[in-house]
Length: 427
Image 1 (tube, rainbow, N blue to C red):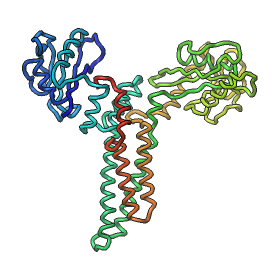
Image 2 (tube, rainbow, N blue to C red; image 1 turned 135 degrees about the vertical axis):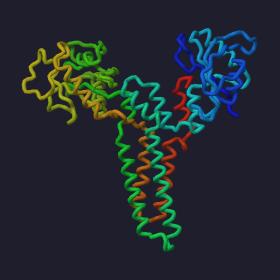
Image 3 (tube, rainbow, N blue to C red; image 1 turned 120 degrees about the vertical axis):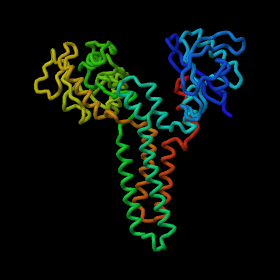
Image 4 (spheres, helix red, strand yellow; image 1 turned 90 degrees about the vertical axis):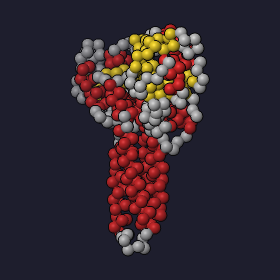
């Protein structure tokens, strides 16, 4: 029998209301011990809470009794909606801790119990984790789609289709000598079904990266020394994040600054000025790091001569247009000092970001999810290419295992520990 856990599940005190959540087999007895009676199931009831040790009043609160398994954690649960002062919360938690079989919850323990009891799969858990950490509206929308099970329902559809294909493959293997199972027809249906499923999985693999959505679109500003990179960075993020100086080589290392623009998370990177030769070993290291940043950028703002741009997809910027003649320069004319062209630059960045991030109503995939979907796609590809029914059936079995890994039915304990430890205590 599992322990009964409790924790403050609302914001840090002081607050208007504090929600203390309990989950486990002793949730009901604990609620009755504090309130002296049980409220009706699933109905908020105003009750006087008392310390079971001496009967001292703790708070007048709304209490909810939520019998399992139809609860968030899949267990018996109770919630106490108390006044949000520190003394009230401390008093209630101390009284709960003194009851037998109760203990304070570890980070993520409520959600882990929901996962272990089949109330959530691993994808919904990851979506909830992203939702708790969301800082932009776009992050919130994508995380909510994942947390509410949109991706999980798609995977469940894949599982049903795989089971049908596996059943047909087993029928073709076991009864191929029977007149009522036409080999050519069933093999054609299996092949068509595998092809259609593989196309669906490939479409999901093209979904945007959740890491990019969470960490921000990586925008790197690069160009020769004194091209105006640091000044432009400061103008984009709205603060003096980088040192600006007329001295060439002022920026010697990468400077990374997160910023949200138009509801989109960006990570702007200022880099050391790039030139052909330098006798300064420190500057050379800075230029090496600048080249690495350029290679890994989602969007490159190039402030040098167009013909020197290190990438074909670079956005060409004619910077310092308030005092530098850029006649014939094909790039976007910008002055960070006067604001000229800045609105057009921001619009261009948001347009680039729109092509790299999930749209309205879409979700984004974590590296684990992309790896699992890619593994599933590989097994489907092998099954589609083989002419041996035995190999085909085995690849379909492996594809089902890949789906189990995607949903968390198969996985390592270490990975689960890392995931749930990132949650707050009350989740």
